[in-house]
Length: 336
Image: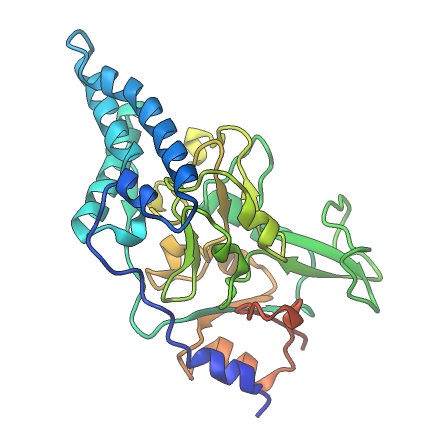
């Protein structure tokens, strides 16, 4: 059997549970985090000052009813706790606020989920280098599914064109504009690898990013302060920063959203691939897998010995990028 000992160990890993303890307000959580307390107090003070404007709008006796309701919802959202420490009721309140805020702003409806991980599931991904022909259907499907900013051409997935005979990302290009597949070239896709030992989560000063029990590395956008430490720590260039408010045309918006995934983001936060958490936790494959016309992408449960991805790991000669770093990416490459 070709499955390495490290992969054997990986599929037996029981991911660490979410932090325990009573739910606390956003400010209380901030003041008790494992960062310099003076820094935490400064951040909390800034938050309180910013929130004062929302409070004034919420209780303005001359304000329109919908404007007052919107301000109250924004006030509650501004100070909500970290998702990891929320009770189930608080999570339900958080998604209802997002749904109602969008309705007040647009007059239309969205559905936001806070579905948790499934039992005995650890997600993994495999990419068949032999089959990818650089069509970019995966990139377009990901952008649409995950409500990514159109103005900046943000994309979680990158397809790199390599010259045959070498895998060298310094010589590869991901901005090719010609007919594909090009003679003498092959293609490799990169994105977030959802490492089992993710360095990005360890450097976050507000604990806004973490690995879920099903192996998906997520971001709580309400707690991201945009310091971009996680971007610097990621060895795979998998995270994206919103320099401006993201633009998603209303007619292109995906209304089926997840709190930790493709819900609408804002300026000043970091985002990334979540294995389409809004899909994968409903038993579907990520949009990129479904869109690939050549079948180069395989997604599944590493803990299921009968899954396609386990078959690939057991029967193909697989490799991972920068494996020597010890990040244990749950993303493998192989060839036919």
